[in-house]
Length: 185
Image (cartoon, rainbow, N blue to C red; front, side, top):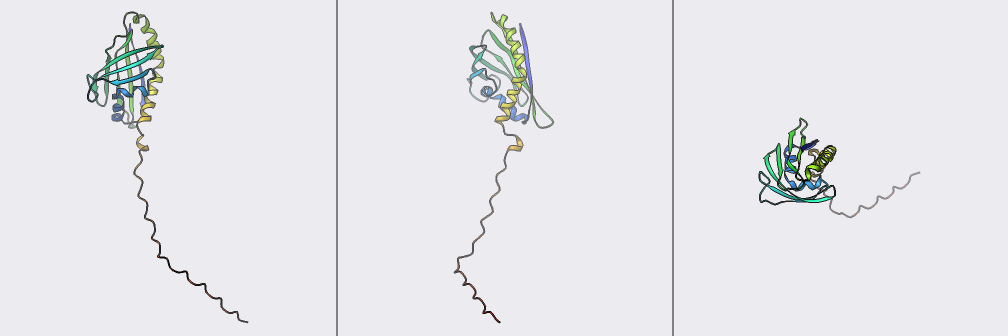
């Protein structure tokens, strides 16, 4: 039995920057607590054919995973498929990004989970847990992106140059105090 889960988040960052963040699979650690380590195993920039190898922990079991990027259309679409043959794998998954009128980005993440061998009995439990966590997972993605990419209004302009210090007059000897005028009667 295969099944899908998905989560949606509105990210307060421009679509190009959100795409760039998500395209770097090594950022997965910042929002997916199950990912213990991840690294790109292919050369060059991320694109179709790029492979990421990871170590993940699900339900107390640590497994090795390999994910290959299967579609890559900036700034709207990233798709992947799992190459590894664990009990439960992500047959298909991806991100769909859409610019919002406010200048932010709507992010949809989804995965189609599939069981293999004994995993056919387990996939239902994994899918149920993933569906339950999907809103929180999308919220973690949003939080990680917004923490990593400064908000447009938070980008500080260079500080204005300080005004030059006023010139000081050359030192002169103090003027003598005026003498008091004699008092008249």
